[in-house]
Image (tube, rainbow, N blue to C red):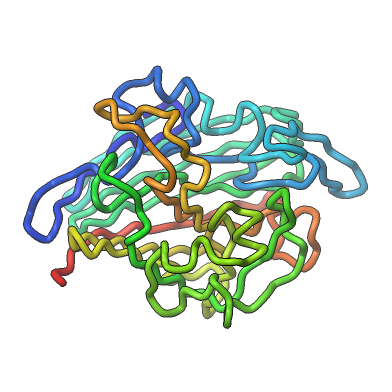
Length: 323
């Protein structure tokens, strides 16, 4: 959809060939205009949270909307998920897709610089959905773009995701405070409920007696990906549904991934076909730079400057595996 650059539906077969839509969302535009928790959207100018809605860049303090408690989330009140993008479809011998473009004005939602953004969605014959991001700016600005699909490999509206088996290629994560802002530490996952280096069911440890789980009401954290070479495409996550056999692999050039286990879904949203999206009926795997990076000098920089080009790539690869 040109509104929010939203992916509205992803239909894939299970191990028996039965096709289902595995992306949460709505049947028509009015649902997305209402209380949508970023279903399927591109989020920005800064994906995830910025503490207290403020940052200092080149000696100037900037103030953002505080739309998530005391913090700024996903670009503010009218982030990239709530704007109209232009669209140009394309097709070649092995793939098809759409190029979406948006011009973000200098000062929009408090961010400096006129920003030109292009997001390209490509679906190829290898059953991959490729998301490519490009951007340029007229002034130095923080930039962190991500794709915010909620996944349920059973099929949307078909129960929770607690039995999904997840592997994250990450030896560390960024702990948060009670408002879900990173403390600045990069902590090892070893010996914690955040260790998904070996595949584990999402629900196996989600309600354990852990302060970080209490802060997030489950998983809502950034993992620091293990990777060799900055900007290279590397495996970040592998998600499998033991019931259907569906498998989703996520590869990215980004340094982090936010695993969000749908903790704030509470049954108040009716999605496709009138399905009620209850607690933990979808999960997100948001490839990204780290939350609140403009306020943490030890995190990889998210500052884009004039003359430079922002480039990022994430691949969602779909397959099946019989148990």
